[in-house]
Image (cartoon, rainbow, N blue to C red):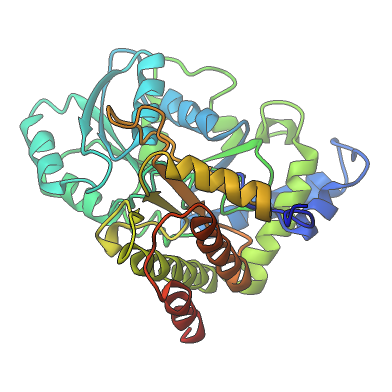
Length: 399
């Protein structure tokens, strides 16, 4: 006998839970890609994507995942041999740095570790010392999915301005868009990348690159840009296929239309951000209570540096892996692995796991997940403090 039968809950930090409404919109025969409905609705998708990103400038769609968006963004503004600065706060900052190396860029990585986030004063000092302005772009991850660290993007822009440095500010919002507050234009971000499978609640397969006039001018001066990655025809297409560099991802577009209707036109972006914040605080309250009598702890100590979309936790090896396997096998709740958190004492990362709480998620899902985790700790004889579920309920009931 297992209690996992029934509808499962994928509580990992992407792909996120997809609304039935999104899936229904995708479940259709292939449409005409030369005229008609899918052609007519695409301009509206671009407008709504800009609203979610907080920009009045340019939005482009690529058929690919977040890694594709990384490469697309870099290919338009960084030439081989040019230098970029990557202040990294986890695995995905390092990954974007590797992508930059792959296109021939010279990469300076400043590793700020896995728990404390960026030292913006240090970033400012590095930029101020670059008097020749060799650094062409600063690559910052808004929310690193591995560590759940959230970067102060406004502060990063302020550090660049204080150093009087002209580099582009590029932000990875793959894990945060539609979950944590982000305002591209107001925060002075020049290029932003995102993807479909997290806060936007659509299956993996689409990457998005947003850019402003400053970045467009850099692109115009590039010696060459790969024909496929070139954002110019995608941003201002003369023909429909140029939006996508070829055949449109038709069914993803239908799903995206439904998702953006839910985010922009119905719930509203401010309410979406508030919902994610409240549910995140409920999770933090529960974990902090558990930690009073057991080994579980939030990876990020400072609440201001915690993501509202994903929470990384340490519970000690092998408890992280054992707990994930118990919740999935016995209760139908799949938790995220401790990605990028291994160390010499825990080479497989068995002491870590993650909660994904992004996109189509609500109070009963989060409270059910927390109850399941507590049941798993009890079943596995992992000690924990009392009052965790009450603490989470207090947050939810006070919202």
